[in-house]
Length: 290
Image (cartoon, rainbow, N blue to C red; front, side, top):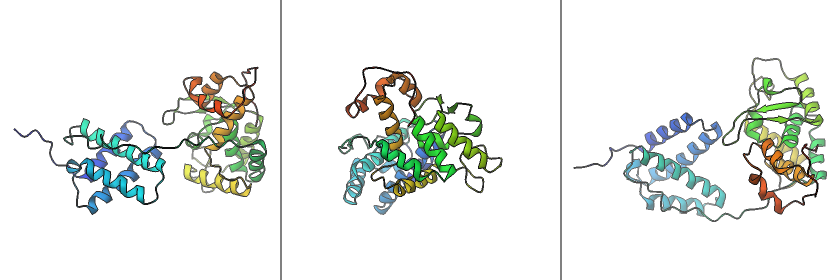
């Protein structure tokens, strides 16, 4: 008796998987990343005249990994694509859509963990000065720098989430919902922005001049331009989070307090920074202003 699953095309299997991700409330950025990685894999398989997900073998996938490895992709990017493949085929196998998971023998490349890029005071002050006249981006930078929130969390803030001296950060990917305090710099920058923000129906805090939500990629690109304007080399938007964590730790902010602000369940989650900062003897329970 033949217990093999029915044939299913790679394209249909991919669409089923993306729908599944959305039902799991994965972020839109995560779904887009999976879609892009699997589309690239699908194109590779199609060039090999492999159109059915059920006929994909470990050798086919290893060929794809070898191909992108020789085309200049860095180890981190390759690892992400492998993770996309593994999650995809694990789902297909669990759903009984493929007879076996062909990714089990596929290994991630070794990734060298680089130390976090922590901006020195002279650098983040230069960034603050560079975007000072851009009221909207000044507010975005101050919120990121003074709270340590992720760029995706920033883009997801609604006007109603802004309170007197705090902001509600809604769940985003694996981060918890939390209320984060806003210091004087962040409050002042936000008030300046809200005073000139277009009066439109859109509920998102950061919007374009035409009243549409400012997307993560738009925020990232704009802040990158100000890094360049401030002559800050080798820095990215996520480094504002690293900078926040490192300087708060160096000021003596208790790690459990800091973890709560960052959306982690415990202080051990930020222990990776201990190798890059010098902790003072005295602990404090209040965030410092950068």
